[in-house]
Image (cartoon, rainbow, N blue to C red; front, side, top):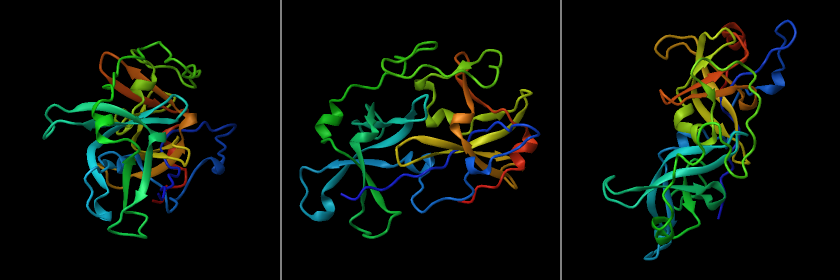
Length: 257
């Protein structure tokens, strides 16, 4: 099977040093041919080998759609959340499938087109329907999941009511459209997308700076390792904090998709 390479692109913020010096090597100004945004992956159908295939084009069957992506505190994409079973959304169960159990294979109907592919789980339908339902509450606030990395030291001060986000709170669904705040606790940008590298790791977050109602915004891509992700348990709210001002973000090279 042909595996589709996933490449970098995601939004975060990066601390300028000295008199607002910047290291352009930390940023990406354009996309590579095989780059994949989280918003492209979310909503994709997950396929499994078909037990009743009658032809080469029918070797896969859809078993559910990707609803979200689970990201660890070190930026590693741990799993995708898929609704399996049920009918018209009724009776479905949310299952977390690890990234190493997924392949990105060429679509038989459009051979040779890298933009047309199928997300295939190395599992049969029965295994998926019998898989344990994903429990979103196992790694609660202030806890470290078994075998998971310790929480990093924040680069910025947590706003009132917030604390560093745990793994189960750092999902693509929570991070997309999250507000971005600068060192003075001023809202300066908004996360628009996440992107993955070829190790299934979130490397950057894409942020829109300026503009009005989505028009005229300046999009930049910054390393996720240089931002803090905070979580407010009461409001179920995610906030991204960066050690940069709005002007510093606006001065960075625009990301070209």
